[in-house]
Length: 314
Ligand code: NAD
Ligand code: UDP
Image (cartoon, rainbow, N blue to C red):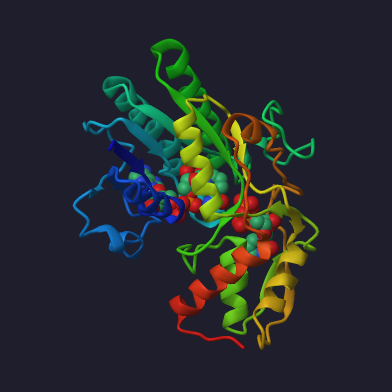
């Protein structure tokens, strides 16, 4: 049994990771400032003697002991991370600095939840880890993209100069139960809109692509990276690529009886035109690849939101 810190543990990915690690018998210290986290996400664990919740902002240092640190704290939805760009940068940079300091002091292995956004609007396709990216440093996504790029630099620095064991995961779009209904990300938006018979809002003409990974596959990838001792960066994501229009149509097909219509809204500035991970390194070093087909993952996610919103479809 290990003592494991998960920053951002009350968020979407963090709460699934918590469940996975508790089931394996570990002791989980969840650190979260509850910006986009929810009590509901961690409610199933609060009576578990192996689980501890600490309300804390990673921008401030904290003294704890642990053998592993999964550093996930950072809002992930563009709506939330653009809400206060300076805070987002502080979370990514100062927060990562603090957690790496903790890793150094306690000799813990440290995993950074980085992102495909480090590639910006990519000029090569699919994206490999050696691609250095095309990020606008002064655009609306910069606080998140540059924050994560700096977090990667810090992580590599602590490895090279302080000997900290680190792993950098470049996470591509991930979806599943426990996303917030008002999160603003595309899967939760489209499903909630379709369930409520509201217009499905496609930004732009819907020809931009994303590749969606189901949450259980992502948690499996993150734990494999932690256990492997590999430094990364390693792409974690599902290479199955769809246009946003195809995603909207698929969700409408799965939510039978929805009377929602697709409408088109302005494309946000710097919205990446296409995104698909090359996962050769994850296959080679982690023996990992996603198993859940998009349709199956969407059905599970739709069932979650039906329950959440109290709406039955079909
Ligand atoms: P989320 O918004 O659901 O979870 C983030 C959690 O971090 C929340 O619980 C939030 O309250 C907490 N948090 C934010 N700022 C904090 C701070 N200063 N101090 C302490 N806690 C703080 O997002 P998620 O989808 O679960 O993403 C988790 C991580 O994975 C993030 O680092 C994100 O950048 C990364 N990621 C996610 C995706 C995705 O598709 N979900 C893609 C790429 C990268
Ligand atoms: N998007 C959309 N309608 C929505 C929400 C998002 O068309 O209601 C688009 C968005 O413009 C982007 C894609 O869906 O092209 C994925 O958006 P999301 O915010 O989920 O994540 P991103 O990959 O852009 O960080």
